[in-house]
Length: 287
Image (tube, rainbow, N blue to C red):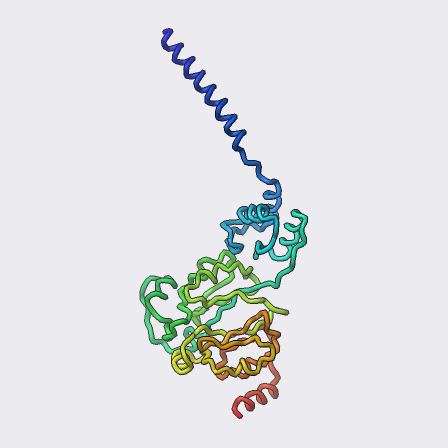
Protein backbone atom coordinates (compact mmCIF):
# COMPACT_ATOMS: atom_id res chain seq x y z
CA UNK A 1 0.00 0.00 0.00
CA UNK A 2 2.85 2.37 0.86
CA UNK A 3 4.33 1.78 -2.60
CA UNK A 4 1.08 2.97 -4.24
CA UNK A 5 0.97 6.12 -2.07
CA UNK A 6 4.60 6.79 -2.78
CA UNK A 7 4.03 6.45 -6.53
CA UNK A 8 1.05 8.82 -6.43
CA UNK A 9 3.03 11.43 -4.51
CA UNK A 10 5.89 11.18 -7.01
CA UNK A 11 3.49 11.66 -9.92
CA UNK A 12 1.78 14.63 -8.23
CA UNK A 13 5.14 16.22 -7.41
CA UNK A 14 6.45 15.64 -10.97
CA UNK A 15 3.26 17.09 -12.47
CA UNK A 16 3.47 20.13 -10.20
CA UNK A 17 7.09 20.80 -11.10
CA UNK A 18 6.31 20.39 -14.84
CA UNK A 19 3.37 22.78 -14.55
CA UNK A 20 5.55 25.44 -12.88
CA UNK A 21 8.23 25.04 -15.55
CA UNK A 22 5.68 25.27 -18.39
CA UNK A 23 4.15 28.39 -16.81
CA UNK A 24 7.45 30.25 -16.69
CA UNK A 25 8.37 29.10 -20.21
CA UNK A 26 5.01 30.32 -21.51
CA UNK A 27 5.50 33.68 -19.81
CA UNK A 28 9.01 33.96 -21.20
CA UNK A 29 8.06 33.25 -24.80
CA UNK A 30 4.48 34.49 -25.01
CA UNK A 31 3.70 36.78 -27.94
CA UNK A 32 1.59 39.83 -27.20
CA UNK A 33 -0.52 40.51 -30.29
CA UNK A 34 -1.06 44.08 -31.33
CA UNK A 35 -4.75 44.91 -30.63
CA UNK A 36 -4.89 46.87 -33.88
CA UNK A 37 -4.83 43.58 -35.80
CA UNK A 38 -8.30 42.71 -34.48
CA UNK A 39 -9.55 46.24 -35.15
CA UNK A 40 -8.35 46.13 -38.75
CA UNK A 41 -9.59 42.56 -39.30
CA UNK A 42 -13.05 43.69 -38.20
CA UNK A 43 -13.01 46.42 -40.85
CA UNK A 44 -12.11 44.01 -43.65
CA UNK A 45 -15.01 42.33 -45.49
CA UNK A 46 -14.06 38.78 -44.53
CA UNK A 47 -14.16 37.53 -48.12
CA UNK A 48 -10.78 35.79 -47.74
CA UNK A 49 -10.45 35.90 -51.53
CA UNK A 50 -6.68 36.33 -51.62
CA UNK A 51 -6.92 39.29 -53.98
CA UNK A 52 -4.69 41.33 -51.65
CA UNK A 53 -1.90 38.78 -51.98
CA UNK A 54 -2.41 37.34 -48.50
CA UNK A 55 -4.05 34.05 -47.53
CA UNK A 56 -6.99 35.79 -45.91
CA UNK A 57 -8.30 38.98 -44.32
CA UNK A 58 -6.64 38.41 -40.95
CA UNK A 59 -3.32 37.73 -42.62
CA UNK A 60 -3.68 41.05 -44.43
CA UNK A 61 -4.48 42.80 -41.14
CA UNK A 62 -1.31 41.37 -39.61
CA UNK A 63 0.69 42.41 -42.67
CA UNK A 64 -0.60 45.98 -42.46
CA UNK A 65 0.17 46.31 -38.74
CA UNK A 66 3.63 44.79 -39.11
CA UNK A 67 4.40 47.10 -42.03
CA UNK A 68 3.01 50.14 -40.26
CA UNK A 69 1.98 51.43 -43.66
CA UNK A 70 -0.64 50.93 -46.37
CA UNK A 71 1.87 51.13 -49.20
CA UNK A 72 1.12 48.24 -51.54
CA UNK A 73 -1.35 46.77 -49.03
CA UNK A 74 -4.95 47.15 -50.06
CA UNK A 75 -8.19 45.20 -49.93
CA UNK A 76 -9.66 45.17 -53.46
CA UNK A 77 -13.07 44.20 -52.12
CA UNK A 78 -13.28 46.96 -49.52
CA UNK A 79 -11.91 49.68 -51.79
CA UNK A 80 -11.38 53.29 -50.70
CA UNK A 81 -13.93 53.11 -47.87
CA UNK A 82 -12.18 50.28 -46.03
CA UNK A 83 -8.76 51.77 -46.78
CA UNK A 84 -9.83 55.03 -45.13
CA UNK A 85 -11.14 53.21 -42.03
CA UNK A 86 -7.91 51.23 -41.68
CA UNK A 87 -5.82 54.37 -42.15
CA UNK A 88 -7.76 56.02 -39.32
CA UNK A 89 -6.91 53.13 -36.98
CA UNK A 90 -3.22 53.46 -37.86
CA UNK A 91 -3.24 57.24 -37.72
CA UNK A 92 -2.33 57.46 -41.39
CA UNK A 93 -3.80 59.07 -44.47
CA UNK A 94 -5.15 56.69 -47.10
CA UNK A 95 -4.56 57.44 -50.75
CA UNK A 96 -7.40 56.82 -53.17
CA UNK A 97 -7.02 54.38 -56.05
CA UNK A 98 -8.85 54.15 -59.33
CA UNK A 99 -11.33 51.26 -59.19
CA UNK A 100 -10.37 48.34 -61.41
CA UNK A 101 -12.36 45.65 -63.18
CA UNK A 102 -11.54 42.37 -64.87
CA UNK A 103 -11.54 42.60 -68.67
CA UNK A 104 -11.61 39.64 -71.06
CA UNK A 105 -9.20 40.31 -73.92
CA UNK A 106 -10.46 37.73 -76.40
CA UNK A 107 -13.41 38.04 -78.76
CA UNK A 108 -12.93 34.93 -80.86
CA UNK A 109 -14.94 32.13 -79.31
CA UNK A 110 -17.64 30.34 -81.26
CA UNK A 111 -18.91 33.40 -83.15
CA UNK A 112 -15.82 34.97 -84.70
CA UNK A 113 -13.83 31.83 -85.47
CA UNK A 114 -14.34 28.72 -87.54
CA UNK A 115 -14.07 25.54 -85.52
CA UNK A 116 -10.85 23.73 -86.37
CA UNK A 117 -10.22 21.82 -83.16
CA UNK A 118 -12.49 19.46 -81.22
CA UNK A 119 -11.37 19.03 -77.63
CA UNK A 120 -12.64 16.03 -75.70
CA UNK A 121 -10.22 15.92 -72.80
CA UNK A 122 -10.09 17.03 -69.18
CA UNK A 123 -12.31 20.08 -68.71
CA UNK A 124 -9.55 22.26 -67.35
CA UNK A 125 -8.03 25.31 -69.04
CA UNK A 126 -4.46 24.62 -67.93
CA UNK A 127 -4.56 21.03 -69.15
CA UNK A 128 -6.10 22.07 -72.48
CA UNK A 129 -3.61 24.93 -72.82
CA UNK A 130 -0.73 22.48 -72.64
CA UNK A 131 -2.27 20.21 -75.26
CA UNK A 132 -4.07 22.31 -77.87
CA UNK A 133 -4.78 25.67 -79.46
CA UNK A 134 -8.22 27.25 -79.06
CA UNK A 135 -11.24 25.95 -80.93
CA UNK A 136 -10.63 28.34 -83.80
CA UNK A 137 -6.94 27.55 -84.09
CA UNK A 138 -5.59 30.61 -82.29
CA UNK A 139 -2.69 29.54 -80.05
CA UNK A 140 -3.49 32.36 -77.63
CA UNK A 141 -7.30 32.30 -77.70
CA UNK A 142 -9.70 31.61 -74.84
CA UNK A 143 -10.33 27.92 -74.22
CA UNK A 144 -13.74 28.53 -72.65
CA UNK A 145 -13.52 25.75 -70.05
CA UNK A 146 -14.33 28.06 -67.16
CA UNK A 147 -11.40 27.91 -64.73
CA UNK A 148 -11.94 31.63 -64.21
CA UNK A 149 -15.57 30.98 -63.26
CA UNK A 150 -14.55 28.34 -60.74
CA UNK A 151 -12.19 30.59 -58.78
CA UNK A 152 -14.45 33.65 -58.61
CA UNK A 153 -15.79 33.96 -55.07
CA UNK A 154 -18.23 36.69 -56.07
CA UNK A 155 -20.16 35.02 -58.90
CA UNK A 156 -18.92 37.83 -61.14
CA UNK A 157 -17.90 35.84 -64.20
CA UNK A 158 -19.83 33.42 -66.39
CA UNK A 159 -19.26 31.59 -69.67
CA UNK A 160 -21.60 32.86 -72.40
CA UNK A 161 -23.13 29.76 -73.99
CA UNK A 162 -23.45 31.50 -77.36
CA UNK A 163 -19.89 32.77 -77.68
CA UNK A 164 -18.13 30.33 -75.37
CA UNK A 165 -16.27 33.27 -73.80
CA UNK A 166 -16.18 34.57 -70.20
CA UNK A 167 -18.38 37.58 -69.43
CA UNK A 168 -17.67 39.80 -66.42
CA UNK A 169 -20.55 41.26 -64.39
CA UNK A 170 -19.62 44.90 -63.75
CA UNK A 171 -21.80 45.09 -60.64
CA UNK A 172 -20.28 42.03 -58.97
CA UNK A 173 -16.61 42.20 -59.95
CA UNK A 174 -14.39 43.48 -57.12
CA UNK A 175 -11.10 43.21 -59.04
CA UNK A 176 -9.67 40.61 -56.68
CA UNK A 177 -7.56 39.30 -59.57
CA UNK A 178 -8.12 35.58 -58.95
CA UNK A 179 -9.43 35.03 -62.48
CA UNK A 180 -6.40 36.86 -63.86
CA UNK A 181 -4.04 34.49 -62.06
CA UNK A 182 -6.06 31.42 -63.02
CA UNK A 183 -6.12 32.01 -66.79
CA UNK A 184 -3.18 30.10 -68.33
CA UNK A 185 -3.26 32.26 -71.46
CA UNK A 186 -3.34 35.61 -69.65
CA UNK A 187 -6.49 36.67 -71.46
CA UNK A 188 -8.05 38.35 -68.42
CA UNK A 189 -6.59 41.63 -67.24
CA UNK A 190 -7.40 44.12 -64.50
CA UNK A 191 -7.94 47.53 -66.04
CA UNK A 192 -9.18 50.87 -64.77
CA UNK A 193 -12.96 50.83 -64.57
CA UNK A 194 -13.08 54.29 -66.09
CA UNK A 195 -15.27 57.35 -65.76
CA UNK A 196 -18.91 56.25 -66.09
CA UNK A 197 -17.54 52.71 -66.48
CA UNK A 198 -16.18 53.60 -69.93
CA UNK A 199 -13.20 51.65 -71.18
CA UNK A 200 -11.29 51.12 -74.42
CA UNK A 201 -9.05 48.11 -74.92
CA UNK A 202 -7.77 45.71 -77.55
CA UNK A 203 -9.77 42.51 -77.17
CA UNK A 204 -7.06 40.24 -78.51
CA UNK A 205 -3.86 38.65 -77.19
CA UNK A 206 -2.80 36.84 -80.37
CA UNK A 207 0.85 37.48 -81.21
CA UNK A 208 0.75 35.81 -84.63
CA UNK A 209 1.43 37.94 -87.70
CA UNK A 210 -1.51 39.55 -89.46
CA UNK A 211 -2.24 36.83 -92.01
CA UNK A 212 -2.32 33.80 -89.71
CA UNK A 213 -4.06 35.81 -86.97
CA UNK A 214 -6.87 36.89 -89.32
CA UNK A 215 -7.14 33.37 -90.71
CA UNK A 216 -7.79 31.99 -87.25
CA UNK A 217 -10.07 34.78 -86.02
CA UNK A 218 -12.16 37.40 -87.86
CA UNK A 219 -11.63 39.99 -85.14
CA UNK A 220 -7.96 39.41 -84.35
CA UNK A 221 -5.53 42.29 -84.03
CA UNK A 222 -3.24 42.16 -87.07
CA UNK A 223 -0.69 44.66 -85.75
CA UNK A 224 -1.27 47.10 -88.61
CA UNK A 225 -0.40 50.10 -86.43
CA UNK A 226 -3.24 52.38 -87.56
CA UNK A 227 -4.47 52.82 -84.00
CA UNK A 228 -0.99 53.70 -82.80
CA UNK A 229 -0.63 56.42 -85.43
CA UNK A 230 -3.83 58.27 -84.48
CA UNK A 231 -3.27 58.17 -80.72
CA UNK A 232 -2.19 61.61 -79.49
CA UNK A 233 -1.39 60.43 -75.97
CA UNK A 234 1.22 57.74 -76.70
CA UNK A 235 -1.17 55.23 -75.11
CA UNK A 236 -0.95 52.57 -77.85
CA UNK A 237 2.06 50.46 -78.71
CA UNK A 238 2.56 47.59 -81.15
CA UNK A 239 4.69 44.79 -79.73
CA UNK A 240 4.92 41.20 -81.01
CA UNK A 241 2.39 41.96 -83.78
CA UNK A 242 -0.17 43.05 -81.18
CA UNK A 243 -1.56 46.44 -80.20
CA UNK A 244 -1.95 47.26 -76.52
CA UNK A 245 -3.68 50.29 -75.02
CA UNK A 246 -2.14 51.56 -71.78
CA UNK A 247 -5.15 52.51 -69.63
CA UNK A 248 -2.97 54.80 -67.51
CA UNK A 249 -2.29 56.98 -70.54
CA UNK A 250 -5.54 56.53 -72.49
CA UNK A 251 -7.84 59.58 -72.42
CA UNK A 252 -10.82 57.78 -73.98
CA UNK A 253 -10.80 60.04 -77.04
CA UNK A 254 -12.13 57.14 -79.18
CA UNK A 255 -10.03 57.96 -82.22
CA UNK A 256 -8.41 54.54 -82.32
CA UNK A 257 -11.46 52.27 -82.51
CA UNK A 258 -12.73 53.42 -85.95
CA UNK A 259 -9.23 52.95 -87.37
CA UNK A 260 -9.10 49.25 -86.51
CA UNK A 261 -9.88 47.26 -89.70
CA UNK A 262 -10.88 44.12 -87.78
CA UNK A 263 -12.86 45.63 -84.91
CA UNK A 264 -10.40 44.34 -82.32
CA UNK A 265 -10.64 47.55 -80.28
CA UNK A 266 -13.63 47.54 -77.96
CA UNK A 267 -15.40 50.60 -76.61
CA UNK A 268 -17.41 49.80 -73.49
CA UNK A 269 -20.36 51.86 -72.16
CA UNK A 270 -19.90 54.74 -74.59
CA UNK A 271 -22.85 56.42 -76.32
CA UNK A 272 -23.52 55.17 -79.85
CA UNK A 273 -21.61 57.09 -82.49
CA UNK A 274 -23.71 59.30 -84.75
CA UNK A 275 -24.43 57.79 -88.16
CA UNK A 276 -22.75 60.65 -90.03
CA UNK A 277 -19.65 60.26 -87.89
CA UNK A 278 -19.54 56.53 -88.57
CA UNK A 279 -19.83 57.04 -92.35
CA UNK A 280 -17.11 59.69 -92.39
CA UNK A 281 -14.79 57.44 -90.42
CA UNK A 282 -15.49 54.47 -92.69
CA UNK A 283 -14.77 56.60 -95.77
CA UNK A 284 -11.56 57.88 -94.21
CA UNK A 285 -10.38 54.31 -93.62
CA UNK A 286 -11.16 53.32 -97.23
CA UNK A 287 -9.30 56.33 -98.61
